[in-house]
Image (cartoon, rainbow, N blue to C red):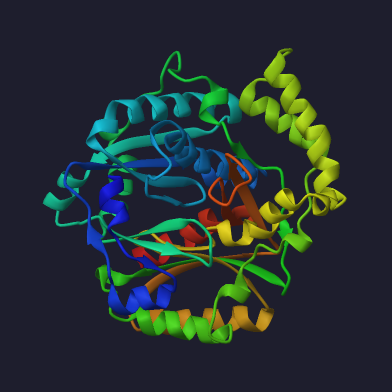
Length: 380
């Protein structure tokens, strides 16, 4: 898998990707691991979207931890898609089975997950095509086209025989499944007024008009979307010690042992360190904090263009008017959810540039509520 991925060129501008569609079909013996949280809308209404994001991201990070950091993935807020090869199948099944069990017991969230072969998707006239993308100097991310990811998600949602059963008892402990995944930052307030979670899907997989649409979207932000990143670390603050301790207990089952004491000591240190900006006294930690915006997935593609953008009210109105125009012409369906802050779920193996990645969504519903609007338009 690594040889295949390393041979692909890396795009630094999504506009150039849409112009060229420089994507490559993955081998038939790969699989799409799909995970989807059922009842996510109800969980959001009960104020649990932070948990929804956390479990959605864990679908990715648990596989990265156990199978390899190079796996292509996409985060969807209340679910995820990850590519694996055939040799990883049985281990991926055990990991996802464990995650299903821990999602229920730790967060009271029902997770559906399954593995769908790329060969099967191609036999249904859908492909899984990928390209690589890097924002600034951040880690390489994966773009997905071809319709295969969407079809795999649909099959796991609708076909019980495709789904993985929960492990009982779980093959992996909860601390292993959630290792490295944290949610310690408070929602980051919008700098310009509104945080928009945006989903855009071309009708009938026709991407011909997307380069023009994307260029017009960029023009609303003076030609680049970098200024629309919702992650501004000057506005970020850590959650309280007790809030973070409660979360740590949920995901690792804190007890009286060496690991628990180490995690407790880390929280006692990091909460004041980040909230009082003491990290500036240590170049290594300061570099980590400064690099977080480049290590975020606020713009991506997985058969649907997904973006979380920090906008002014005027920019938000212009985006809506433009998308209404394209939707009225029958070119796209779209979904939007507006809120006042962005939410960030962090995967941190180390403070090095290659050791951390951050999953971004709009607060209080984000992608999940935008998807509700998108589905309504697609049905219409």
